[in-house]
Structures are given as structure tokens and as C-alpha cells.
Figure (tube, rainbow, N blue to C red):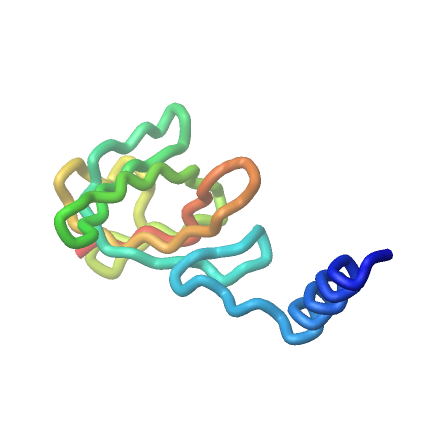
Length: 111
């Protein structure tokens, strides 16, 4: 192995030993802590168990689509509610996890 190759291997091992800093607000995988954002409901599709939320980010808007599961906590005005209780235009706080299959809502809170 060349000297440069050895240095690259050593540098790579050092990074692994020290650990990489997580990106704020981003979930790295299914075991990561849920990310939470505030936005407005664009669409709710009970048939496909999904919710779409527009999240303002400065001059841009992030459109977040997430799957809703039986484990997703949904609350409207402090009371447990079904997905169908969420309406387009309503402000929500949505917590979600990034998974290989897409975003999964862990909670959606309105009101």
C-alpha cells in the first residue's frame, strides 16, 4: 500500500472512531429520533394512509409527504382523532422518521 493510501485509511478510521456529527433536524434511519416541523396540511388521503404538509423554510416551502400508521398519534385540539379529522389548510406540528421506505409520521398535532 502506498503512503497516501495508508494515510487515507488512517484518516478514515479516525473519523469512524470519533463519530460523525448528526445533521440537525434530520433523522438518519429508522432508529433515529423523530424530526418535528410546523406547517399546513395540503392533503389527507385516508385510503392510502398519507398526509402532505407544506413547511415554510425561509422563502421556500418544503412539501413533506408521510405515511400514517396505527402507531401515529393524531390530536386535534388536545383530543385523540382519526386521520380524517385533519383538514387542508390546518396548521399542524408533525413529527416523523425517515426510513428507507419513506417518511413515517409519528405524531400529527393540530390546534
